[in-house]
Length: 292
Image (cartoon, rainbow, N blue to C red; front, top):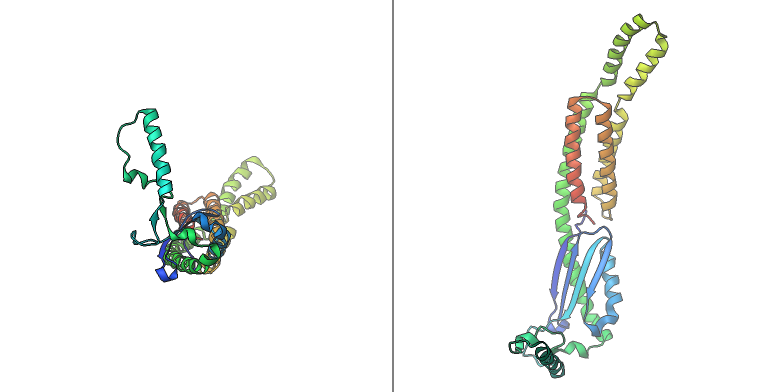
């Protein structure tokens, strides 16, 4: 079953599991692109986290955020870093004096700066933090996977419906084009018979050229190929591996066959169905951009 590239998950681990807050967001992207926001004390774990995320995602712009979860600001594990606060206050006063700024320095101003709160995360080493953090990450990744699969089912339903409409349109094209090249050849022979009688040119050579022109109006090969592409598309749509790029390529091929049919079979009915097919293919291609 196909999976969408768009998903979001937020996991908050309990205190006994380390008190982690993990967010993972995935958006559409042609390739895999990963960015991570991690506490400086745990920067050594970035490689391990990247490998975990990469193992479960093939395409998409993925962002992850990891932090300690401190729901209770009165906890003994959280305190004000007075040295950091003093540093910011000193420099703010210098700026006020230098640029003659008005207003007071408020507590709310200080809270906008990083490292004002000193939490227990600074006391944890990567080695001790990794087991509990890994559990939280796995839960977040499971949620992302579930969200991708849910969205993927909706995409599958929409695309499958459009493929069925295209298949019906192809049947109509096949019906309208049935015997078209023979009709073209018959009309050409009738017109050439009149011309030959007047010009006296070699009738065999002219008839061969007429047969060649009629053969160029035959769209049997294009019909066979587009139906083959439709069958392959439907089969790949049900696959469990990465299929987004392959499906996009098949859409391009079907679009090319549709254009050729409209060009070769100069029939209003065929052109009408081709326009419909191309419109549905464009909508499918838009949906495919969301597929992993």
